[in-house]
Image: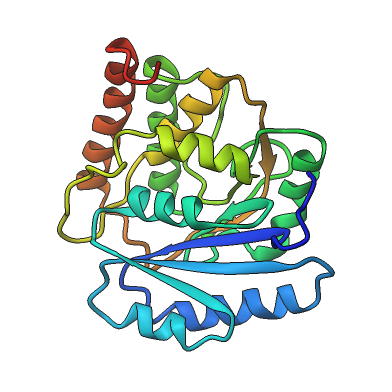
Length: 251
């Protein structure tokens, strides 16, 4: 990747909904890591319509840019941050740092080798999952099989929140998403979505090389995932991706 002189080498995009409790530790950890790196960076926290002071907590950290958006779900927040990011590479990560920021070099390597996307994977040789209840793992594998049957084959973990891509790829893909684009509705409560499936589907359709990278992942005891509600929402998202494609909305 060629980096213009006035552009940071890396943008870190963190979607956040009611994360005032966890963000201070997350941003401090990221700050310490970045301070020891030789490359230039920017950190963007996208406040997804929080009601607990998330934006103020994020803004209190030096160098953190805060984007405030209506509460339309994680996919909408990620899109807003990715389209705002100025870094040559854009890294998406979760507010709880389930995948430690120290795993970034694992994604940077395939990007330097020309990959369109490098995505963290909790599956495969070299991946480590810590603290995950067995039923959550089973749910994830069943959902992955559904994704393979309906929308996208060949990727073992579409839902890990640690993903990176060159800025030009982020601009192209996030401008093409439909489910959590400009017309996404305002929602109530935490809204974990399958925006990742649409993003990766579009990447595959566009011919970008997607590299899965085994990473270390910690299950968060304060997860906002509601197994029943979010499983139905995610299934709807996957079916919508297939319907959108059949209707030519991605052409």
